[in-house]
Length: 550
Figure 1 (tube, rainbow, N blue to C red):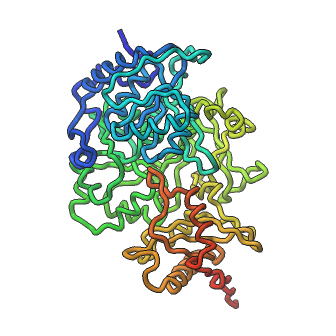
Figure 2 (figure 1 turned 180 degrees about the horizontal axis):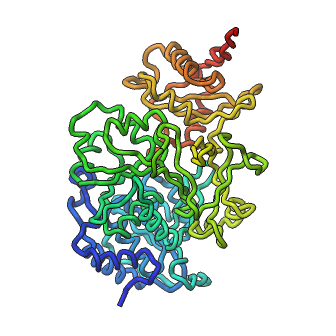
Figure 3 (figure 1 turned 120 degrees about the horizontal axis):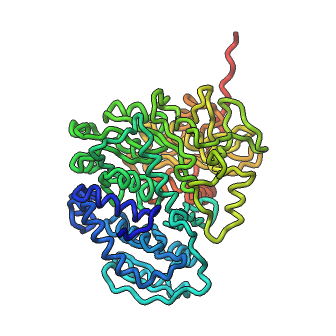
């Protein structure tokens, strides 16, 4: 008799344990083990299911049949996977907490998610108990291995959907770039559809029937690792190699020693790896393809030529899951153009202007998507928790408004431009921050660049570049000369209006836990820098290139 209900993620593990018992489900590298203090080696499917069933017994006392959540702060460790799957078998949703969060962020998430229990690493328990007290919450916090408390049934907690596939599997929080993070309610169906979508891709992403091994440094509190990496391996009996985070210096060693055949990446990773000194060992790997998003247009081809495998660019959001996902997994991939393929038959897509009118070919506009057929929301997130108004606003007119600016070429392929919120509008011209960042990052003196809009009384916005220098502190050397050099560098490669009008050198740029630039924090940093003497005004250098006489 099955322990987990059909249509649930736990049932996928249970079935995989029966089919692939001795095959490895999780693999912890030596480097990860040394960094985190856990045991290196493999955890088989059979062992994972045995440990999950033991946890199901531990959690059964708190399962009251209604919808409820347990918050988990367990990083990318095996316990994170097993606790999530055990909770799922009982119809309890997991609310993963970002390990980088501190008191204010943790307090918000615990209060907002209405979690009934927190399970955390022992090193974080005291902090979390302080947060619970400060927020006035009646939520017990337990360390791994501690006895679980008896929890009373929640009065008026509501009813679970009749179909287990529609029950909430996880509550994942968005990055909160436009305010407090929103909690995305994700069903079992959402997760299983991602696994089957990835499995059916084919092309450059064709899977090995004997079993693949995917290595990911991405965190389990985001959908890429929790849904994409986990589900495709569960569905196919493959192995997951979860790293604690991205470590450039040990990356190729861990890829090689783990036997990884698939790499999951974000755009910052290829850029960093390309800047490392070449090493013959960097090509001694088994990787067939990388699956991810955001590789820089100028890094795409050089990375593939140097490291010997394709980076297959995809597009999706936490809210869309696989139901509107697109991927450039067939040639021609149009490398270096931010191309992420075209919609599959199951996806309806529109690209519209600010008045919801379709834009012409090669013109940028906001991407709107939905599932084709009778249910436009099939496989999407179930909604923003405790924010029905935001959910309906995102679905205004029956289409999900992504907030991403893209362009469709004459072949029907989609090209990413930028997030709508990151666009800089200067004197009527739309400027993508990522494009300017990509050019600045190519300069030998630049380790990293972050570009945002600065207010301008005449032009509306001006381009503001925050620069982390390579091999030096923010105030070392002649900063004015270097700022002017960088602007002139941009002027040779971009339209004049895209070049920075302000430049500031910083010792560090803010990042999220997935190594993306933290855009919200970057805007706050730029606003602070703008009023300081070490912010350099380079607007005088920005002049249109004169037209040459015929």
